[in-house]
Image (tube, rainbow, N blue to C red; front, side, top):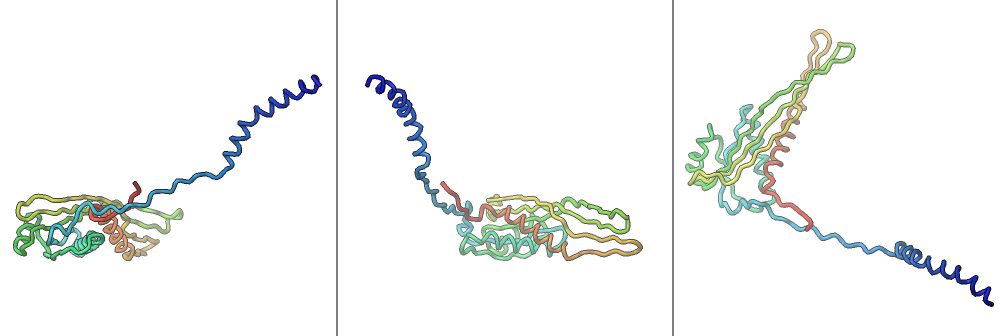
Length: 214
């Protein structure tokens, strides 16, 4: 009997030593507690345009042409009002120079004026020639900057201002052997529209609501 009892002790001790490992294994295989993520919270726009009562909008100036300035103005107004609800804006038309913006606003009786400038500061050509030298193309990319500001008419003080820049391709010219030249004008118009949209989205961030988790 003594011999049998002494032989069981090592086996018993080994079994007891393995219990912590076994318990940890069972816990690892058990169900995991998943903490639910907090719901997103709506953050209102940083600037409430409705508090400004009535805003006069001067058509954005663009040295490249009035059509481009008008496009930038329309896209900006649409984007700025997207999350703002009811905002009263008055079209003031064109102003020859920034110094005339306030004069134009006073004539129309508005307290706040919105004005901007869209400029193309750099044009970069890119030339591609085929390996047989029989054909090629020249593409152009432009760097544009949109600067917009809100000004209090009575004091002339700047209430808000933002500037953004972007670079986009603006079409291509195909070159072929002999006198063959083909101008691709369609993509140029599409590129200008996409460039204006990108600039507007960057500039109007303070007028948009956003969602974030806290």
